Image 1 (tube, rainbow, N blue to C red):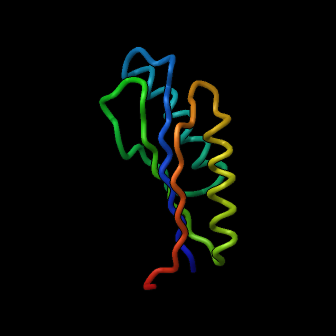
Image 2 (cartoon, one colour; image 1 turned 120 degrees about the horizontal axis):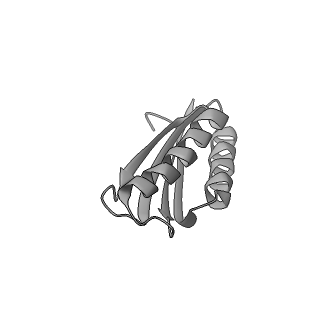
Length: 97
């Protein structure tokens, strides 16, 4: 078993309130959860209108599969309307090692 995690820093240029930011994040996190069946949460910059940090966690049988899932999620984050991907940090590890 392998656990993959990702942290995506995104910019939401059209958000002029937390309500607008939350609408974009709700759409993005719902898409990721629905398509990839993984854990997703806003993990940073909750009070900043135009920035967000999203954490994602996946569990897979192989290192390759976990990394492939995270890369595919990264492509979806990058192409999501209303947000710009600033940075992505991906990590895959075998628990206990």
